[in-house]
Length: 152
Length: 419
Image (cartoon, rainbow over the protein chains, first blue to last red):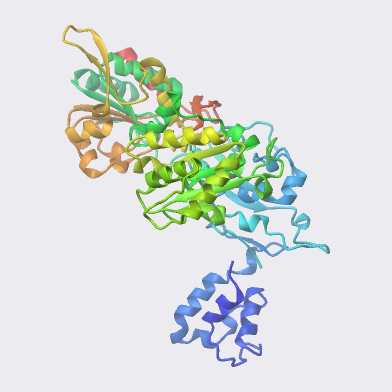
């Protein structure tokens, strides 16, 4: 998963405040949490930062397809292996003999399921990263061999 | 939720929990299958047409022509069969007997040696369901199931909770990867990844065998003895261990003897099984009927001796690769395989000089130059039958969609009729 330092290294590091943040590090953190977009930094659009700009737009993927829990599935990376479906603790609790045992989910309460070879999200409100008692569960991230799942 | 589940024929895992959505003539949705399976089940983009010498032909004429080519040839070869049902494979053996052909499948340059050792009882094997319910130590040796068999880890070997492994991957299982590169599977195994240089598998096997015997293991490639001893101690403590053997390991061993020795040693001190990571959905199936009928799994020649009596010959000289290299065959029937695309050019080139009959649902490099092409129904989708999973369990394949194309078994049947 991308970190703020990784993003910071690609920024101009001039602390010019043009983006409205006091430092480039603050801008990096804003990019990571998707509170800002790469285009907010005018200096990055200069010719000498072109490579950095392109890299950043690749790293900081658009927030458009993120779920309410901040989960993004990079569909181009997902192989549909279903590791996340079987490893997700909510899936196991809701469907122990289906998803939890490695088989296809047998009810509609699961959060993750594979459709047409790509993992899809439903019932996000049940995700352990959601709601008042949220915890930093990483069951689906660490089990993904292609790093197709990301939380912002 | 769907009540009916289908079987995916994308690889030899034969996942039997696939949900299908159909809109009349085609499959519109495939749920729970991986991308590989979805691509196979949705059918090919470029279906094969029925042709003779590049000209469009009807199926009866093509089958007649195919039978003629096989009869007129002195040394015909039947090759492929990994993507055919067991029923079709049995018919293929019958055709081979009738025309005194060589018959070989892709296992002769794939998992053949391992399957042979298992069928001959030299290596202990187990089923994938046993792995799911019982296995606590799982080794992927020279294999990268995250790419080759995407659902391997999630459906059977590492992530699922089983009867005796209720806490699943978090606490109850240890996954180990031994490979020459940091593969996607190694990424999941994290600290239990053992990187070795190419061709060093034998050395590591020997070192492990001696570590299991209580000696200090030594290898020339810089892996510390401590690390090997650590690995050996994990293996020793295993209640139910399984080694999944990939092509990386099979290709680096000249014979199976060190592996058999390691398995014997492992079974002295603990409880270990071995399962080959078979690629094509029914390659293990191709070996089974041949083994039952001839005692050999592949590379068979149904020959006649000088008196005219039938004899069955077997040996490395009967493998498709050797036959094409030496140019001994003068006609070939290729079914469900693409030697022009997968074998080295110097070997596959011989197929350009002999009449080739290609039976396949899709256009391939081999069908491009074939004298006769016969389209067949997509196994496991448009035609049913049975197949053998990588662990030797027979799985029935239901038909999903009706098609007017003949199944590969029916094509062999028709060829037999003409013969």
